[in-house]
Amino acid sequence: MVKSRYTLFVEQVSSATPRRDIVAEFERKAGPVIACVRDEKERTALVEFKHSADAEYAWRKMDGHKMDGRAWKIDYATPSDFKFFGWKWTEGGLDDEKQTSSYRTRSVSPSRSD
Image 1 (cartoon, rainbow, N blue to C red):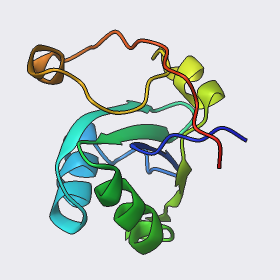
Image 2: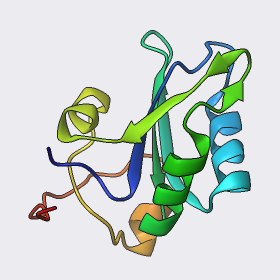
Image 3: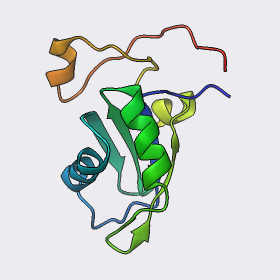
């Protein structure tokens, strides 16, 4: 299965947890977050990191992390997760202009074999 190296899919996010708190928690424990979007109805979020090593660290250390009474289930994002949130699949290296935008378009890049 194709998985992102920079973006995590977070499940079981409390409806009481705002996006800014998700970002703050990941940045405090793992590293710089480029973007975060959440779906309140599905209680899910996508969190994109600046560095793949930070995403890996967050995946290993924060799966099961409890916040606002819910234990997060964290895995690497897949192309279907990107599609659900309206993001286009890409892997790494956004230019500075796109990093500062609140919504970015994403380009397709070849997938890596595992």
